[in-house]
Length: 286
Ligand code: SIN
Image (cartoon, rainbow, N blue to C red; front, side, top):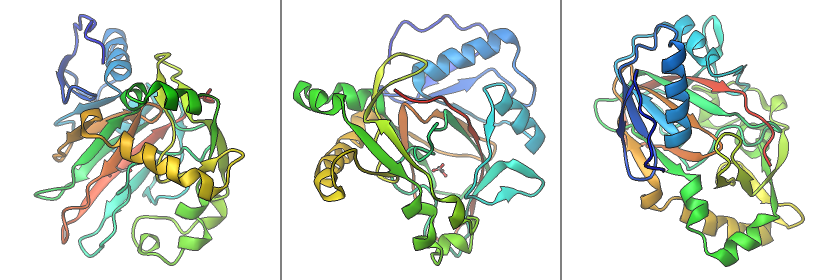
């Protein structure tokens, strides 16, 4: 994170850790931000990689309007949408469920040829305790690698897939009873991306593999790839790269999928958690 913060006029920033993440106050997201506020929000998004808001009272159409200020919406193929709003995917854990969605370090949609730019998650119902989300900076993860490892990874590409997460092999899992669409025909995307990307907004290098969707390095078998992928997954989860966000009803997080991983804590058995997620289209990565 750089320290030469823009002199913000419309928004106030409270960083969440030394690594990434900032709570933003001074904006009411139910109204379209003015030009100055939007420029400041975009700057904060680039600078902090994940921005958080509290006490935002938004209807579904207002969340959709807000999302469109950032770009085109990617309609999710795997999560049940909110009734009447296909643009809003529901991330639900019912009180009776054991598994949660997003309970491993990952980045959304890396299995798409053009992976999602960002995800906007809005808390509708949260447990009395627990249910936080952790974020990790893939800029810092890359920068902390040894020069030798950076050199080894520089020209590598990796395959990412949705098949093992949403395809036929998991259609009988608990996810298909609560929260996810039974849509395995849509889980056919395999995509090849550089292991180290140059971020399209900031120009910084970031590590771009994740434990949920990356399956192997291009030209390598799964068995050959896994030990190095496991090493990178352990490295990327180091605490000094992370921040933690505690949700309250009406909190919102908006994260950059090209610069972060996230991890939804599953530490609230017997409680319900309902989130509304909108995912924004990105650009090809290189
Ligand atoms: C997700 O992985 O997109 C959901 C994260 C969360 O529910 O905290």
